[in-house]
Image (cartoon, rainbow, N blue to C red; front, side):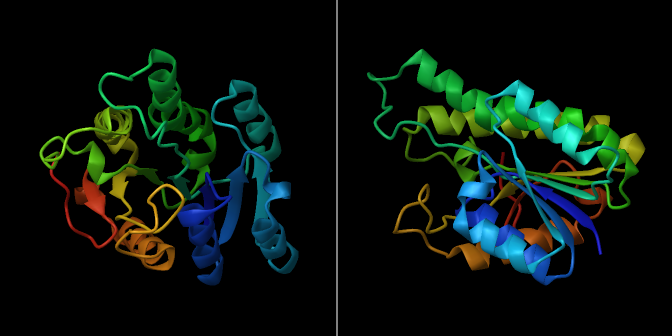
Length: 230
């Protein structure tokens, strides 16, 4: 039994990660901007004493401190930085806007690292010492054969670089740090044409996170265990 903290749990992959982690018998701290307004989370919390709901807005630095106040010195074994946004769908070359780009960069790249930084005292108290970041194959430069998606691609590419650095910096403390690709999933972000459902993605992601060893720290890995080219 371990203590998980999962961000972005109001829907999609995040919500499914909560369900499957609870089913495995772990304790879960599920965050969302307003978890009490998410019926699925409230229903889970009503029947699962192992589930704790906590508000967290990645765009609001004060929200981080409020979360820390709720946690106190509670250990966190596994942190899954799942929350993220895609940005405007019409942000093609010729229509790019700095404010939109900066917003996605803040939520998808900067905020997960700042949150992890804040949570390090709790993570150091944990036994598992695992930190996962939800990236995307769209952040792979080598895999980019279709162009476009400037905002989302660059945010995830930058996240990958940060995750790699973090894995090196935390190696002396025996942390395992991963950058993950969830697959093309049928969610609000992935759209109806996705190749897999949330259950398949979450199951694979948890397997990768739980089975990863020190040699895997700093790697970019898909939900099915395949390595993704940088």
